[in-house]
Length: 135
Ligand code: NI
Image (cartoon, rainbow, N blue to C red; front, side):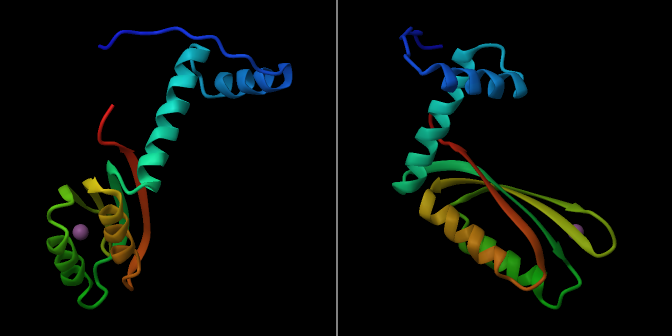
């Protein structure tokens, strides 16, 4: 673990009260922990906006009875083999499949993959969760 530094933060009373309510609701043990997460989130957002390197997961559900859909989804995933780390497939019920696709790479490639999958007819829902590829 890298060295830990301390620094002071000045805030208006109303803002710190609102922040304390927020971190209590989130079950943070300290303000430091909550601030660390906020900083990381902001840095990830910045990476994402600037097209930097990100890691994350695409979660999608689809109707596998939809004609040709399974093949189309597979073709798309093969086209993005440099971005996809692994895929987990779960047969939810007779009609529906759940896929969790772990991704790592340029933000623009990850976004392109997610959008290309999402617009296919028969894909019921898709969400993209982004984390940091670094720190
Ligand atoms: Ni399935």
